[in-house]
Image 1 (cartoon, helix red, strand yellow):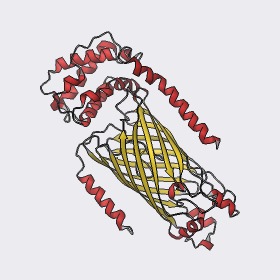
Image 2: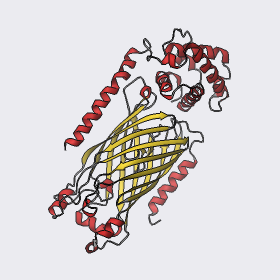
Image 3: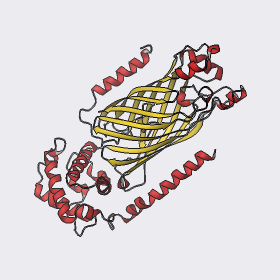
Image 4: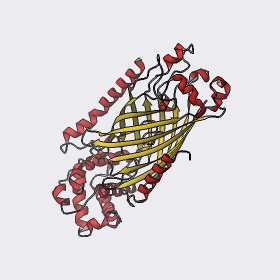
Length: 152
Length: 310
């Protein structure tokens, strides 16, 4: 019965290999963004285009558009551009509110959060950002669900 | 429709589905597909994800039909599942196993097996998420963890005389724990499941065995890996280790390795053309299945499954 043990060992080894980049990402936190992501997003001009289209899609989305009815689209675009630019390793500084206080007054479910992820995916598709790069950005954003979702 | 209990449970689940949330919000493919036992996961092994499109605060529903065929055998399956608040999954599945070509070639007339006899099995499943979030906690190593139970009842018809001879029971309950993690930055999903079971060939050949076969439960690991090519397309592989309860009994009866059971493996591609439909195609290697009546061939073939989810 060496066969199963070999496979289990292989699976564990594979897990170990995969662990390295993800752990590096965790411990590095905001200090170092994943290499090349800022470039993959088209740097500041690309991120500006992406957030422009993203916010345009958000405010008309039937599931979550209502959440943005009191938000000025232009200000949201600028704030998000800074945030994504900084997160992805660009030379920007996000100076807006932290995620928890920014969403504290809103009723946001996990379904709403997932809807926002889908709208962002559509916007990234429209900009021609490769799927693997999209997921690298989403990996930085997804943990924000802890602060963004207000209805558990 | 000989089994009124199955009908009653189906009706209950269908009713639950009609009151399901109209607009469910799970991300594409993150509810997995339907396994052969009806629970959500890969094709052969359950994952810690809760089936249907329902996320927190929502109720969702899924239904599937599956066809698998190898050199000597065929398996049809269908079932339904309800996902409650991305926390609890209830599932119901029926399998129909066709061994008639192999039976026809091996006159097991002394056992009174009717030509063309199929083996049917019903499976009731429950799975509860106990910790974690497989998808969104991308900055942590903590997987989503769920515990589950699959209660199986096999209806072997005239093959029952063979199962009686082997000393197997006609019902059994598998208990499992699954850990699933989407490594989002790598677009890779990994799952590990540990199952306590005494089922023979998933239960289609009953549960346990008369001595010197193995009657007691054993712990069997199962692994899945899937790479996300795009939002709606994933490729992957699975390995499911299985007990080999009957071989020793067969050997004692002078049949050598005629009743040997092997591990299962597959490679798959899953495609979700819309939020409500997914199709899974796999190449399966099910090892030897009662090799004594199939020239000791390995059973390899295709697996095709369609799932609707709301």
